[in-house]
Length: 586
Image 1 (tube, helix red, strand yellow):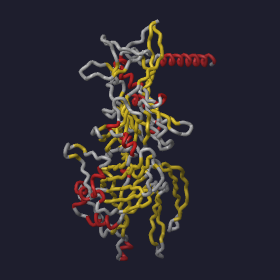
Image 2 (tube, rainbow, N blue to C red):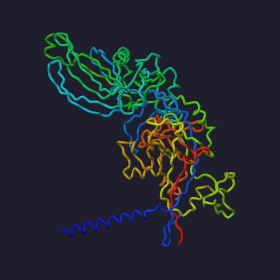
Image 3 (spheres, helix red, strand yellow):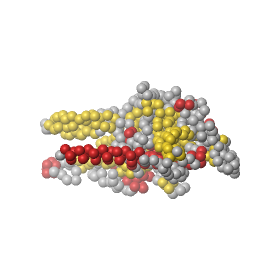
């Protein structure tokens, strides 16, 4: 037995040593093979990318469905409320949505009477605790029910705002007649649709000081007993949600009274007849709160009674007609649009004008703002470098290239990328470190935890994203910790102020220098969920259909990062650090 244990220990040691040696030799060659008889010297090359910002005039806000590794889920990402960003200023988020009935050509029965109309939109919440308690019904029956306490997720700021619900008269079409492709709706469309969005101008209901509550929704069914006293029949509990009553008369006239009519007979007729619901948010005291909602899980329920189709013996004997409870449901479906209106801080608004952004030399600050905000552009290795008549690179005293103004398009030129490709380097690590401009950013919980890097031409992720995901660093249930090597979380100091974001580009640089990928520009945005890899479009002042990640539009936060401008402190300036191993002959 001792011999057997000893052999196991020896085998384990050999396995560990073999694994170590195997890992130690896993270089990423660029420009040549590893050959014998050479020494290896680890070195650092620092590149300064050109970086600047672009401001959106509007962004796509329909079809904002969260995408997890290419698999779409039924998650409609919409924001409702008022958010006052400490850097960028206030934004208002409202929602316009079509609805779909639970059935067409409905039969509401004989003598239908509409009792209540309930609008219900669930919040995102997590269970904090549960406990059991006894409940005595009016009949004397004792039942056990579960009481749940919740914590609300994705609620930002805690002041009230005015919430109004309108029936919209604006028809939302599915296809763009100019292209016959799916209609795209933008963040400023609702403002441009005019008064039709608010129907006749009178809201169905208004809540002047709306603040979401984390409490359970308790629904009691109460009937009159033989003594005409209220008697509790049953109780149901729902998770926290926006739940308000809409006027009965309006929905009676538009639904109950239309039984058998063409208006409710099919989808096309219905969509033209009942064109949608507009949920409008307005500030009441300059601030408010912002809700992150899955609108598709919401509904409008018409609760009504009608004569029972079957009568009991007692009812027949008494010559009475029994009544029964029924429901007719409208689901939020079809086109769902977010309007986003941001009153950008004047100084930042001026700075973000396209004519004020230096796309040749780069800018001092990079402005990242979610929603209808802005993102950064990173241009790597396109600076022109000096070379002699024989095509050899002219180097500075540190062995690096000498940068020059690019010649005319008709003249020969070489870039920093050409220089890097000519080197026989083995790339070990490459990363960008974006330092936060703490002089202007309000520190704390309003700083975005994650930023997102993407291919500016296609909107797709870059190679390093796939490496994290393939090595099981993709956390579907907790996206704030997902893809941490490539898209590092915010690094904070002792005072909880954000210092920097580290973005790994190692595989992207290896592919770029190995000519496996084109030298595309990169985009950088804030992200509410780095697992969401779907892209949509937006318009800037210079480019229509600019690609932007869906995760940026459903984000509300903003930050300001240091760029590469000459006035940026050297220690905080944006740099791409490339650690490489260089082979030298003995």
